[in-house]
Structure formats: C-alpha cells, structure tokens
Length: 423
Image 1: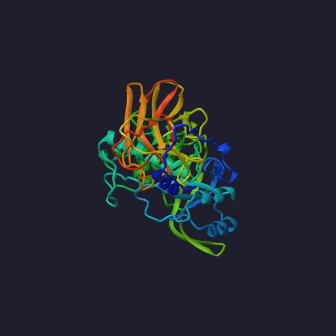
Image 2 (image 1 turned 60 degrees about the horizontal axis):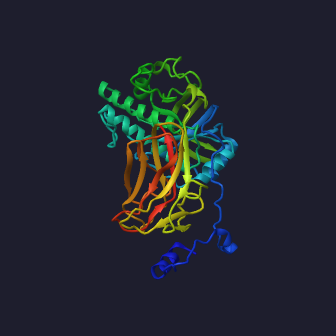
Image 3 (image 1 turned 90 degrees about the vertical axis):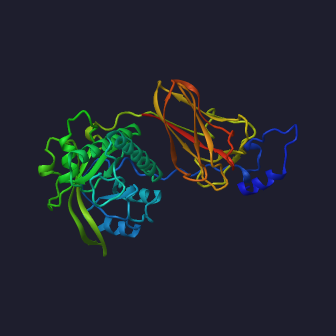
C-alpha cells in the first residue's frame, strides 16, 4: 500500500475503541516491509595507502572510459569533485554505484570539495570571510557538507577529502582567512572521522599552510596536494614546502595540467598527479564516537499510536519511517541514544522530503541545559544528513532527540533517523 493511498484512507477512516496495532508478522507476506539492500560503498578509505600516478578531470568519466583507461593507462587514482558550491561541472556519472565499480576495479579515489575561495581571489564570488571566527565556522560547515556528500556516495570514514582553494594573490589578511577556514575544515573532518586534505597552487595556498606548519593558532591539514606544473612525477614541493613537512606519505603533486591524453582509444583532458599517501599519514584523525538511531532500531525509538509507518519515499533511511498529523499538543516521537560522556555533540537528522510534509517540524534536543527546539522544513533537503547544530549532551542512556507534532506548520511531521557525533 502506498503512502498516497494511506492518506486518502485516513481522511475518511477512524479507529474503533478496541483497535490495537497490528504487528508486521500478522500481515500477509506480500505486504510486509522488505529490508533494503545493503548500501553501495567504496572498498575501504579513499585514496587509502597508495603510491603512484593519478589524474583529475572536471566531470567524473563514464564507466566505459574508466574501463578503457584502467586497461591501458599508467593511472590508478582519479580525482572526483564530490561537493562545493563552486563545483562547476555536472556530474551525471558520479553515483554510489560508480564509486563502488571504480574501487572494485582497483581505482583509488581522490574526493574533492570546491567551495569557498580565498577572500582576495579575483576569479570567484563565493569567498571565505576575512573575520577569522566566521572563516572557521565556514570551514566547519563545508566539512559537514563534504562528509554528507561522501557518505551518500559510499566513501567511508578514514578517507581524506581535499579542499580545493585555487590560486590567490596572498596577503596577511587573506592568509589568515584561508588558514582559519582550513582549521575549521580540519577540526570538523576529524570529528567526523575523516582526514583533512587541501589542494592549492604551490605559490599561494601551499606556501601559506607551510608557513603556519607549527603555528598553534591553526589546525594542520593531514595531506597537501600542490599544483606545481614542473613536469616531474614526484612529491617534492620545491620552494613551497620543506621536505620534512607532511613527510609521512601525506603528499600529492599535480605536476602537469590541462593536457589531453588518449588511452584505449578514449581521449580526456586531465591534470596529471603523483601520489604518496596513507591512511596513517599524520597519525590519522583522532578517534570519533558516533551513533545512528533509526526509527526501526530495537529499543531505541518510541512513539504513540498516532504515528503511522510508511515506506512511501525512496529517500527514507532504512526500511521505513514514521509520520503524523501536526497538532497543538505534546506528542513527541523520541530517539534514544546512549551518550558515552558529557561533552559537545553534533546532532543530525535524516528524513525523506516531500511537498506534503511539514514546513516547520520541531526537532527537540535534550541538552544539559534543557530541551532545545530546532525547526526544519521537511519539504526540502531530504535523503541526507541535515545538521541541527552542536549541543552539550549529558552522559548516559536516554531520550536525546525527539520529533514533535506541536507545530502550526502544515503537512505531516516525519521521524526517520538521527545521528549523534562527538565533536
């Protein structure tokens, strides 16, 4: 039965006084919920531990192209633009299935975020703030978005994500903004279990991060990827970064750019790279605690009989999700999370989006200072993790995140899944 049909039935139906919920086992086999297929995923962290040649190009190539180049080219790593507001190329091929196919065929992936650029850039309009605190916050926001994109593609924790900051005419203010932005980027990626990388030209971004290598005011990225088109396939950064910096398999060198190559009869315009990277480079990200609770997680979700169950949307997390009409009364569906220590945690929620869902759904977070409510428009941004913010949560097992029906907004309120991550 589809959700659309359920809606029409509920508009005209009512429950009798002796009605009780029907368990899934009592349903005919043909109408029972079907467990979703296992999610597609890359075969391990990306690019992982790798020494050798790679290439990057604007649009992820078609499968036939990747197959032809895998059979005949010297390249075994490929850069892919997974996120960022300045990402200019369409990505019709870049799906979780594409990621799975390439890594299964032996390709290593170099995930790239092309977002905000240096405030002194003359090429872009979406820029990093010159205020250091704002720049850090912008970097953290970019990292959250990049991780969401990586996870949607099946690129797991332990992978490195590279923030592409194109060449800029550096000056002290611009340098401070870039370093602050990368600090927020690095700290948030580490909190989410990923390595932090940075791509830039040797003479601007790489020189700036190298100048702050031991500066405690800034967080150091784990990998540097430097553009220095000297035609030499190695990881020597020349005058831009001393050899003892990022020396533990933490470097990628883009040694030629905007060149055409043909392998297996297929031509692509690429940049050439040489990689010496490792998942242990720089010691790896610090341990991170994270917990996901779905509405179907045993003993971790509670809701009244007023909440229906649906598998209508393909954007759902897991087998199904819960939905209810809005009312001006307290009727909260709770997700229970066992928090290991009193600390700061990022709370994110997953829900399917639909034009018929609520435009002001109240999510309630039980913090150390009392309940905090964040309202979300569930008509948009579905099928992914959406951050509610960072909150102080107390140690222990209890109801941490709730979805309330108490809203003047219109449309169903939806409870699907929550993720709590220590930061």
